[in-house]
Image (tube, rainbow, N blue to C red; front, side, top):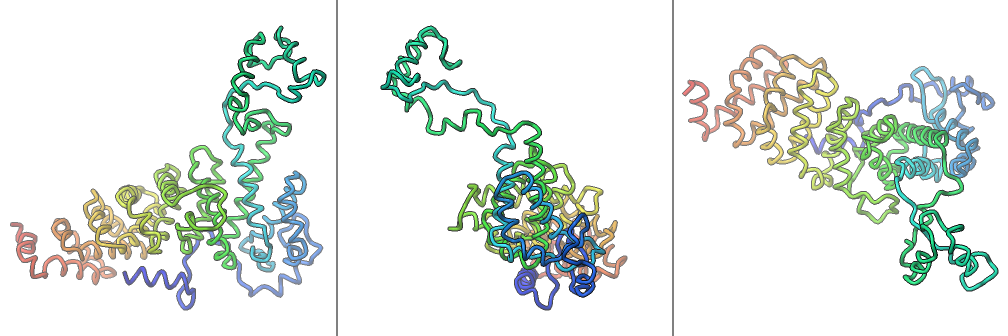
Length: 456
């Protein structure tokens, strides 16, 4: 557990040790070029250039939030474009640091509402409108909707298309208490005044993707991490996006995944059962199931991000009760990822297994008994992986597995492979020397040691 405590303390304190690396963190975010940025980015240079002065955001905070909340196409487009410029920084961009989210109250909720608006209409509802009876002025003869309407409806001229013909249907509905026949939310089943056509739906989708990209950029800023990690609505929205990764826009899913990965060291899954305001009912189990669905996807960027996300979530002991029931499925998928030729998939799988092996004895026992797990860990070391840190973590996983007495019988079959790496690669000789020592020198392992050495 020493490695987990070190990782947790490093993520919490952020002091002497380096913070957890983030996927795709924009470069050039240091303050060394602040003076040059002020001279090269005057406040009036706000056109298509990326040199946007931070004072612009300070002077327009309220307008940006109101523009997002208005829903007007021109205002929404202006706000999204402005926030995209303020939140993104190229490697060679010589401007001041992007405006932190904490300085703009209500901005995160306004951006999430843009995504939620698209999510509400993303999947078309196939339904047949139920027949309704007009009850306005039912006791009056002069309104046109009461008895006069029923009289005219006797020949089927003014009836709702779903009612058929004749007044018998109308009389039956009136006798059977119309309020029970018609659901309380009947207006959701009707064609509204502001329904969107295909072009309108496409524009809504583009706005949602742009808002998710801005939220992703915000998650790279250290000033925003605590605010976003404690924002339940933010996690509910992004988890809902990855839950529907099969039908949702691919860029929206990618942005949601990278946002969660960036905030994972501070994420406590118990936030979904906390007293914080909730907009989308998502439980801890449903959130983990959403991650597992993405982990099993065929898109390399998605299953790599999901593996990295699981490795970061398990560092927090508070997340263990929700992740441990899925450990067998997680091990099986991560072992499959190690067999892929993609180097980033191997790195993500080894990194996640490295943290999972440190959780408890049960995780180590299940990983050692997983088919091909030992072979593929050895293959990562022997190939070797271009990143030496990945090979070191693979060796450390094997050392964690051999520390459990129940695993030694399984690992004795690989004694020759361990000895070969011990004498051929000096970088990992210490680790494999300890592995062989654990296998052969324990007092209760004399019979097993003899079987391994002499081939009995």
